[in-house]
Amino acid sequence: MTTTVTIADLDGMAGTDLGHSGWLTVGQERIDTFAEATGDHQWIHVDEEKAKDGPFGGTIAHGYLTLSLVIPLWTELLDVADANTKVNYGLDKVRFPSPVRAGSRVRASGKLVSVEHLAGEGVQLTVDLTVHIEHEDKPACVARPVFRFYR
Image (cartoon, rainbow, N blue to C red; front, side, top):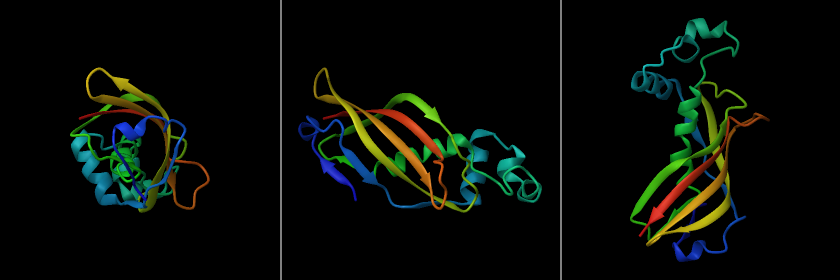
């Protein structure tokens, strides 16, 4: 369930557990489209026949594809309703502990680490975000994204 707040509501929310997003399927078509967009056509991502005999038993999503899914999953965790501009400011840390096999479902969980006011009408949020793979013990991605919201 999405937590909807205003910029003013964010004061005092550091440490808040934002729960989980819904599940999102990472199918081969999405992986192939990402390969086309980035030019990364490594066989472990796009060659289903060869990948069957590879280290993962099938094709896997690119790590950066998994990272890109942070945005749609994140927007299910927190909505800053009065922000008219939302910016991905960067990442403090990213790791990919486990591959996402084609056809797997992923979801995100997040915890608000810090809330900092910016000059003017803005706020910067730092979040501990984990992308979980359904039926897997290890996460697909552990990241600390930094977002900025402006009124």
